Image (cartoon, rainbow, N blue to C red; front, top):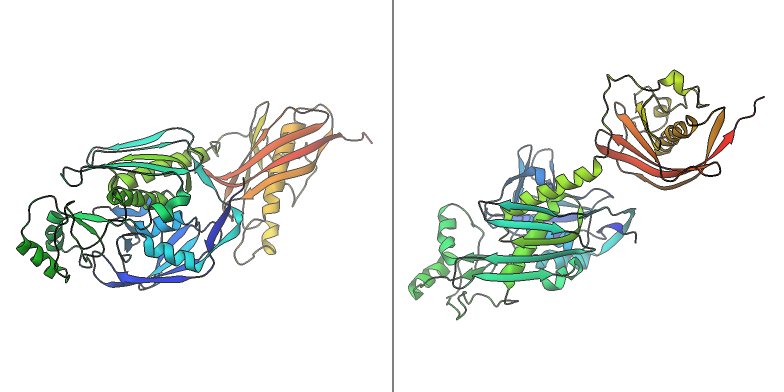
Length: 462
């Protein structure tokens, strides 16, 4: 089933305090074009730099996930990103006027409610999933965290947390479908141990912390005098310890709310791998550090699935140059779209085209921002595939393409790019009909692909 990309139907605004900076932060969530992904725009800085939600930009995970690009930072982003993924979005631009997202109540609830109100719309482009095909795992010795991804037909998560605490020892949470995020996970709040609070305050952290944006766990004896002092520090009414060992500042949504919140964090952090995940994530003792290490492992694994690009040595002697290619193809300037053939096998051909600014089509196709027309990428793959077929035959033949299917353009092609075409027969040639799949690369990245059917016709001798 084809799933289309989605963005916001309307923009919305979230405003609140940053947990660690304590400053008031405004985030504007805007719709974005296809294949945009999630990006943060620091509108308070000169030139308004844009920071991609990309694991490559992670610079700190000590108290939340912090991204930095060219000196511009944005932190505590995991709750917002979890909401975007959980609400089935692909493309959103987030304008923010400080270096930290607002903590709100310590969950994704307010982001989810705002997305529901703004609405979600479908776009034309197909969503691309990273479908886990084999086990991917990491173990982080520092945190003793173990995270595994296994094949599955949906995005599902199983999670275990374990602390050396009589109050919060072992908890387990599961999400059987990402579609249940809103009801099962979104309103689960972050948590903190009482003994951590003063340390965080003394180290210039949680300036925006309040007793209504975290579950406070009491794992050792504490006097009412100490609790009164804590309440004063956080400008809160008198607090007491509940029998289950948490402050009476709030009621739990679930008995395992802490584990569910950790699951929320995993979803937000794994969004940084840059692809929608289709697989089961099993996490033991997760945290922002191991989560982002695993996001990097997912991104690296995704890249490997895309690096079917042939190796290209520009110094190697080609099997066919342009002069030899013209002996088989009827095309001449300006329509010969293949410069070299690097290799042939029984079922595959590798070709090259160097794109320069002198290409005649650039005169009319986006002349101020030259982009190679997609239809010519199709033609170039077709010509490369035609050579695969024609070189097998004795005598003079032509190939006429009679069908083109499943064409996708993934990235634009511009002057200076070297195109590598890999065209493969998808079935044996029968009754003068050849079926092929073509993929075009720039470096290791796919820029275009498609499936072709060609009829092979013998040329008249006269």
